[in-house]
Length: 207
Length: 207
Image 1 (cartoon, rainbow over the protein chains, first blue to last red):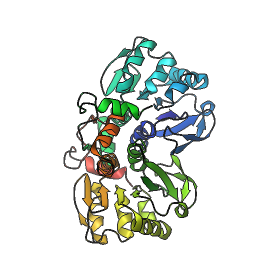
Image 2: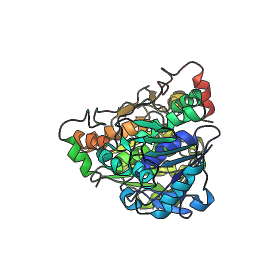
Image 3: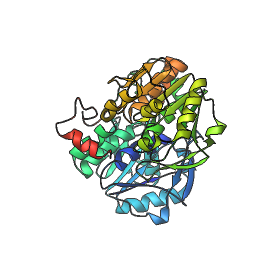
């Protein structure tokens, strides 16, 4: 199974590398970072640079498209080459997926009309503009469109995908291999459970 | 706070990028990937390349050292330049930390004598050779030495560190910003809960 993760300026590193690691550890899966041209792309903190190893033209027909989010998503909404690659890749893909604000790019590519979808909690209000029905869940499956909530949710989505694409045992073996037995030190990862006053502080980290 | 993550050939991507993302989102923290020289370093799946943006010589005295694990750790145990950088950086650091098999590198650098430490579940038996006392916990703090369990445990460790280094509210705000409210689709992330027969399958993914 060939998975393509498009990188664009100011993506969020964990959005891409969480699901990358899950999928790349699975037997028979190959994950490729793509961009307009091969070369370095820097994240939204300005301190992590990943190499894209294929151009859009070199990988037009992956089995899985996985679009990360990031502070650069809003600029990327106007990147017609990226949107066109997503649109074309979707015509071939078995799954077209996103993490965090990546779903807004699926929306801008016209893929979320009438679809249930999710995104980062702070951006749920933005999905409607693309004809999507916002759903506050960690991973939302709508036919071949699979969207994940903010940043770290890509790990859960990738395990879910792997179970469907290969089998549950393979997904579980990868989960055990990466020792994904999460024990967050705080119960602050969702606006539903976060201590009062934290939402504004978190939003300040995202602008 | 200046955090340095040394990269070596065949590191595991999520070991480095999980804690990177947590720490890089925190105000006042700067995370730098270091290597013998600036330039690309490729992960243990051969499909992800990160750029090191500082040489060892350019960042000898970070506040936090964070050593990732990976399938390349065993080769790196003989990399005297890496071990010497870790040893020297530790003489300045406020915390010296590791994820997954990265703790074996702390051990090889001589930093785990008499220390409680952890590592990937499949490698717990390797810690004793370095004079460490193996502890089966997600994050183990022994004075300034903080070690995390396999791969994904680096996210939990980074949040724990951030709470100590800055304050709990900052750690919680980052947790909310990255929506770290994990919902693994299976209860297979630890050898304690994994379905029977899965351990061998997981180990096969790690060699």
